[in-house]
Image 1: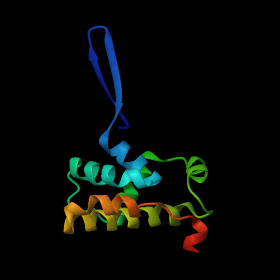
Image 2 (image 1 turned 180 degrees about the vertical axis):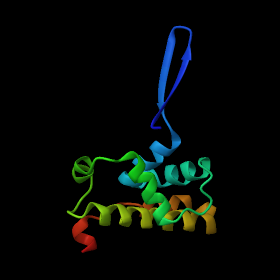
Image 3 (image 1 turned 120 degrees about the vertical axis):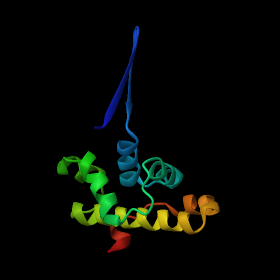
Image 4 (image 1 turned 90 degrees about the horizontal axis):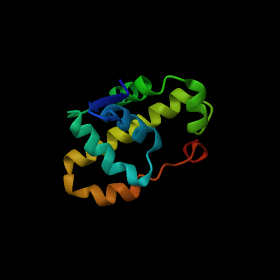
Length: 118
């Protein structure tokens, strides 16, 4: 479920679920997303998520490969998603081992391009 609804008299509010937000942060992985990835994983009670589990989060919310090709660099979408999941797994491991290191982690989260990884 990507969206949740809350109805009050005269008001209808729609907002994204924590898992959907995590999926978008995992795909974007901008510098400013590092702290959000850590926070959302904690809110979802993902104590020690593997790269495979993080890939599943992405795949649950990004089901259209054509859309992913527009969002991600490179030709091999599955490889790109795996790379992003591994990167997030390392970020979360680092946070668990040193929770005070959030500032340095955020600075290092700049996403490399496909050509830099090749």
